[in-house]
Length: 178
Image (cartoon, rainbow, N blue to C red; front, side):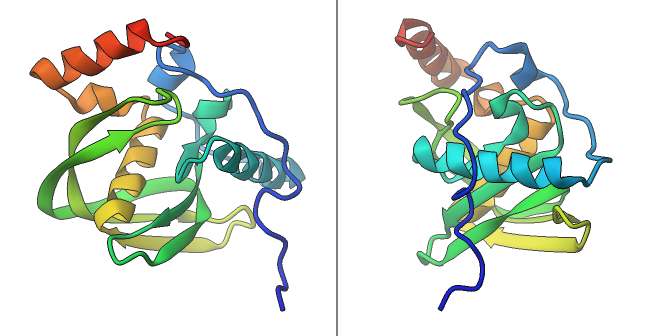
């Protein structure tokens, strides 16, 4: 029997900010107001992430410049990780650096080989202000690093160089949404 509602079940799907939107390229502000509006934002973010079939979503991707992200992401062993982090800090990113395919809901349909560490730890708080520490490996570590980057005003294409960067940015310009 389930005690808690499914994340996003009471949320509204929000419009997605796309590559080039200035909010995606500006650092987000720390959350200071832990009112019911924050819980609703997290619900809306889950609803939006699920509607877009993503595994993570940062608040600035839905036009809210606050340090919050949600995730529902498997690791390389197919273990599901589900949650949210308010005011996250990437406190560890180490291990082997792996170049793997990475996409983003703000660049729908595009991906590029992006280098990330295979281990990451993020600390922050919940919507209730309770401390939280989340550790991930493999694909989930990639997700944690990706979402923390968003809150710093970075998109994964900012980590690319050379032909990988040129190719994905050219594809973005040609995309229907570009």
